[in-house]
Image 1: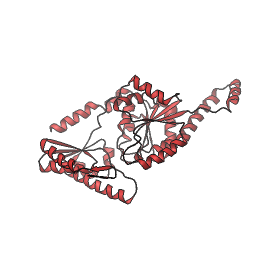
Image 2: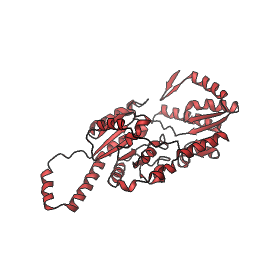
Image 3: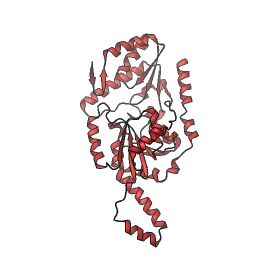
Image 4: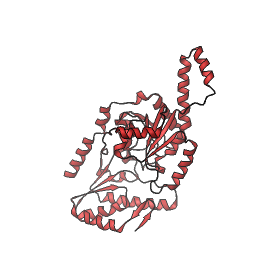
Length: 344
């Protein structure tokens, strides 16, 4: 029928949703979404088992119209949860800090999302290498669409801090071991332009719905730091393993609870890649559980840069065994959880 903010209103969806509820015994609703209230109410009226999975919260940009939309969406999600028999979310940490979930403590259950260890495709790996070009000393990965809540600008703004710390670390090592001959060589090379130490490689959609203004802002930063930044575009699930295999660290600089877990960080950990994530409820849990990375303050480019440099320079300290990670985030446990839930 029409579009509101990033959402689309469809009368046909409402009709078909009601019809489908009547055909099934268990109704699974993925939230947040405004229209989730339709199958929730229909399921209760028709005596069905209604289960809601609350993935994250929607945090819209500032502005009166966006605030109105967010309030309406919260009311709709609250109603959907009210009519649900069970409410699933990924972590207690996220639930405790949610705007809505604390009202439904008795219904809450926690389970990690289903995560499979990615595989490497040599063909895709070669394609990515070609896009990166000459390999720098370190490759920093970002797996995110170009959206305001992902906070990618803070990583771009952290580039000078990361470069500076890496160069200072190298200088300290050289100073500790150099000989008079090495001093002479250093003096001779001092006038040469030093090549880039890092590259930030972004895998994700460049044109998500409703992000034109943010894209314009990001492209200005990209122009400033263009020698450091490479956009791969959107990769499918089968290609992500090849991406992780080429990076030295993965960064999740998200700024609000539209990000509530970050499956990509667990996938990266399974591939032996440490992670920097911002201090958001739920998002910080994988690092807290595995110690495979660092948690950085939200919207703080300087601290983010320090954390990234620390992990790159001392990478071995932030590597955990594959078994430990796969045991913690076992897809078998997730499958068993849903089997028990649906059969009860």
